Length: 253
Image (cartoon, rainbow, N blue to C red; front, side, top):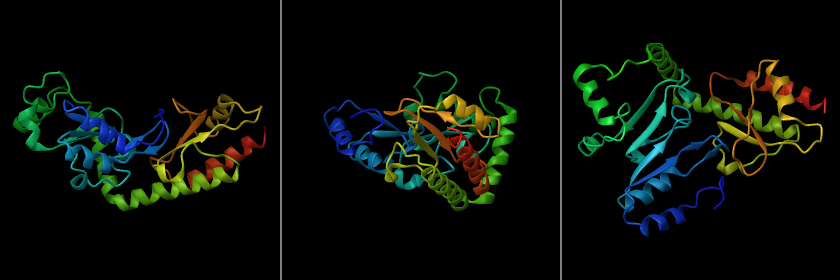
């Protein structure tokens, strides 16, 4: 399986069954190199059927894409204070099953990010073990308030609408995408770079940056791409404004 291919859950199951020493399986929910949404539920079901614990990286999906933690039953879900939560970068948190605490008591592989010590210490003192980034904590508190004001449904509906408007506009401009529709996260999009001889990513980036829009180069994909994301405090008017400026740039080629 090539890097960037969709996960073959049958191979995951075969791999786990053929190696009884596997105790944990880690999976990324939303993969930001390509914009792929991985089949976490299927992977959790396979892992648990074989008594394997699951660690899910939700760094770029939590508070954006609806997640049913009770249905996943993943042992650990990891995310941060930015991305879809729309706060500042600087805090990482783990949602985990409290029943796992005894098994974590003697795990000393990390000094700073020791889940057991952090949890027990916070329960005793109400404070973090080490000096926290206070400004990031306040920003996270505000971001959480804004999330509940918008609601899970409202945020996901806004992200989806932004994505659909973006996809339609890009298609009208002649762009194509790295992934098929059914693998897309509807948060981030990897766009195949045009084959126009005059096209230059840096020139396009600088043109758009001067007009208030930042785009990102591709990273590690099977084809040359650039990436666009709709997460954050973005709305339909922002997406249409971007598409208008992109169209102007493409007309210069």
